[in-house]
Image (cartoon, rainbow, N blue to C red; front, side):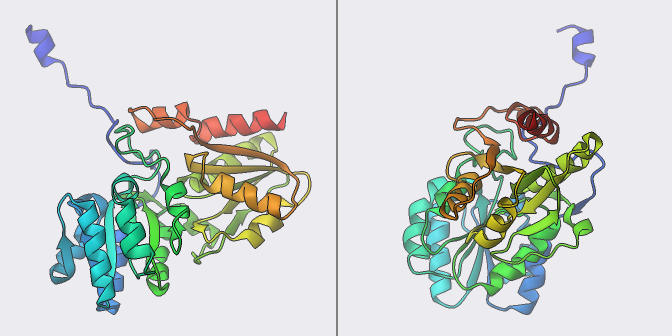
Length: 333
């Protein structure tokens, strides 16, 4: 190997970095971990459990303060869910963390039979939802919401940002019964602070209004929808954004009220396959309510997604703010 070759800097890839913050965007560190620790100071029955992923789900913050209430179950998600159900039967309130793919695909039956069927008070909070990692199909939970929506007794949440997560934690703790929540970890963007936002379980929130387009969104796609709305103002296109953090139960009343306003293109945007997620849930509710509108979906395709750098993948699959802006403008012409 030549000296020139040896001296060349090694290129770094962002393919494995699960960060959805834009350059210069305001973030808050580990909102879930800090919110759970605050909750545990107030509730003695709160425990934390994970499958060898405490550091990667921000549960390490809880474990350092409450080591006697932290349970590391190893890489055994089925055992994790079964043990959580046992703790819940004895009066504890387990907050269980792992990656979304491992909970919903590997341990689905254990959640279904040991937690949901008995309507136990277990909170399942899962990182790497949808296309928030470049690892590829083994780690991309593109169908988790569809799976969890189908489970009886299960409340399903897809938060947008740090504020959503901080407020979600005490709200789901106050709710008796199983909850599945997507998790954004690490340095999480803070975008909802400027919209006088308050998380309410089962409630959708109109963050901004617009005469031409209504975007109904959840998770990181609400962040993208707000970016799109600001970008399209330059083209004199008014974009309203209805944030739907609770996927199940769905706030049908608010969704129908906003979608039935005449003359607007209704777009459902989600970081999830277009099959079985928020888009199809909204479409079904609009049909049942007799609402006739122009309806489109922005979401991930029914396919195994590629591995790579997140900005590239978000452009490729149409969920970046730039591609979403162009897509919506095309639908309006």
